[in-house]
Amino acid sequence: MAPSSWRPKLVLASASPRRLALLQQGGIEPDALLPADVDETPLKSENPRQLAKRLAREKAEIARRAARHSEGLREAFILSADTVVVAGGRILPKAEVVDEAAACLRLLSGRAHRVYTSVCLVTPKDAVRERLVETRVRFKRLSKDEFERYLASGEWRGKAGGYAIQGLAGTFVIKLVGSYSNVVGLPLYETVALLDGEGYPVRFSWLNAA
Image (cartoon, rainbow, N blue to C red; front, side):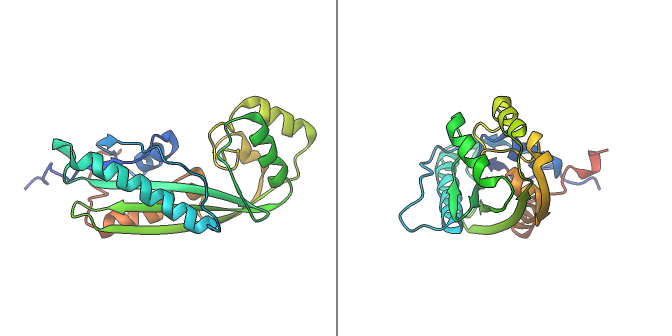
């Protein structure tokens, strides 16, 4: 008997092309994108882990409410994530202007930093499952030319910590301990494990992947 063509729906609560590409790498195609606009300012005394978890939960909840009011997505899984970069005890911003990116690069140059991503999954029955993943990254000491040319590239725009490891900034990385995909924005192993553990058919499309 041929396998059933039915599968539950999946909503990705993100507009990030990087998170979408990582899911697609794992053979998972969301049925809808419902990005949530949340204030990412840390609360007073909030540490990086708490910030990542809170923002991922808030994004998931906003998308969940929208999906439950949509005829085709009422019983969908909702997946969200938030990534936080920390250097020298400081939570770095998602750089939007060149001065922010420059400040991030100065902190990252020649030292180690940590990247936290919290993944939040809401099941069709509204159970909430979470995973927090930490990766340690060390940058080389950036030369003046590298510093200026990276800023000129614009690749940093909208990226946590002011860099994209999957792009030009990958040439700055001396050492990485932990999940590479976590630094890109979605720890793939942990995300697939969450989905799989809650009954989402993560390998549904693998037969036709070749």
